[in-house]
Amino acid sequence: QVQLVESGGGLVQAGGSLRLSCVSSGSGFSIDSMGWYRQAPGKERELVAWVASGGSTNYADSVKGRFTASRDNAKNTVYLQMNSLKPEDTAVYYCNAIASRRGSNFRYWGQGTQVTVSS
Image (tube, one colour):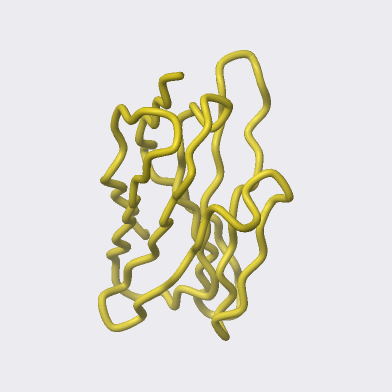
C-alpha cells in the first residue's frame, strides 16, 4: 500500500499564494508519477498538474503560468506552488500517485486538502 498525506491548504485572498505538499510512504512500491487534482463543489474532479517520473510536468490550461508542480524524489514528496490565486481555484485538492509493483500499476489518492480563495 502507498499512503499519501497532503498539507498546506487554507484560506487566502485572491492574488495570494499557497504551497501544497504531498508526502508518499509505503514499502514494496515504486512511485512512477505524481500530481494534483482538484474538485470544486458540484463539479467533477479535474487534473491540475502532473509530474512524470522523469520530471516533466503537465498543467491544466486554467493554471498555466500560475501554478508550478515539482517533485523531490529523495523526500518522496510532490509540491504544488500556487500563485496569483483566484476564487475559482477554490476546491479540495487531492494528491495522486501512480505506483508500480511487480509489473502492475496502481493509483493512490490522498485524503484531500481544502483551498479557499476569497475575493
